[in-house]
Image (cartoon, rainbow, N blue to C red; front, side, top):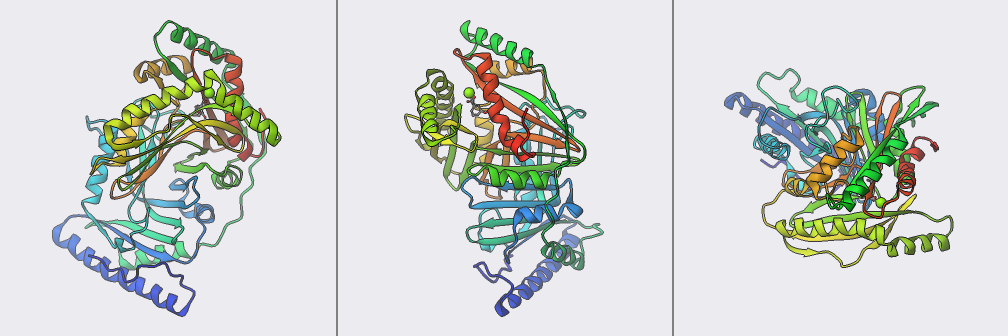
Length: 488
Ligand SMILES: C=C(O[C@@H]1C=C(C(=O)O)C=C[C@H]1O)C(=O)O
Ligand SMILES: [Mg+2]
């Protein structure tokens, strides 16, 4: 049933706006009463979701001010184009690994399908990323993250269907309120639903919390990491594999709890052109500023990226241009890049009816680094879901290696750490199987007063351990700057 009475975004401040606001309340009351009746009659739960246009609310400010009520259950997302920002708060439903024998991507698809089969949504606004959406991600390697340890709050995958979702796009600001209405639910009354919504809409911007004083840094053995690169180069020379991405971890300790909202705020200011993402779980928050899109699906249109090959930015325009040229002409970096392009082409040909991948890369210039970048566009087969693309592409040789299986084995053997959600698909998807996933790099895990940062490099035949180490230092910069401009 559709109880939506307007199709355009209106604020509530005008006389007409107040009428609109009242109409929303009437609409919710009516739909929720109907839903409750249906639940009682059929004895089956309904996922009730209400989308409405609201006056401008800034998602990042709301992320910060909703910390009191929803800490540990929030997410934040900003796309690099700057035309979509999301903030999720609370949990209407949570997707986590079950005992099913099917793979994790199929599990998510099935669990999502089951939730949507009982959904009642006033989705007539038709705005992107409104209504029930899932937000979250997968770990890098299935079965790697145990029930204890650094990534204990995340597991093989974690997705939220938020209780409240704030969506800011070029068309306005939208609030989606979602709740699972069950027969024996204590807090499913219409009054309670409206109260919670009212409380959310009246949140006022919170002060930006300060980052506590830095205490010390803990680094895994750098010499061992360099040895792993030497061994990888040897594996490549003997023909065992073509490329492998090796990452390392640096842990920073602070005198008090690190506020994720402040780090996200700094990342948005310091890293334009990147995905800014944050996903909380319990006491942990995985966040970062990734320049790399894994997959975006909008109807039949598919967008992805090959991003591999790196060099630092220059201090002035001339040096910067020279460094860019050096990168573009460098055989070792071009080969790192080419393994990604060739895998991408092969994989996408399976799932797309049209595909557009340029012959040569261009440069992507970010605040601290420049990369070789080949944009990918395609038209998908009908009725496909973004999850199928996530499964197909993850991990590309930009984060795993080539061939994939051997590279994954070597990563486990050589890295000796849990990547958790680092370098993994992080993003959102909607009811129709559209959405956007970034690769969770330039990222870290915040837990109390500890920030564990990760950075890796594509190892190919021409790799030199010391230069790869320097490359990781450049890749740590976005997170180090967001944490207050630390140097390590
Ligand atoms: C592995 C990372 O980045 C990847 C590796 C790159 C490289 O080695 O040149 C470049 C971009 C990313 O695909 C990272 O940032 O941690
Ligand atoms: Mg590299």
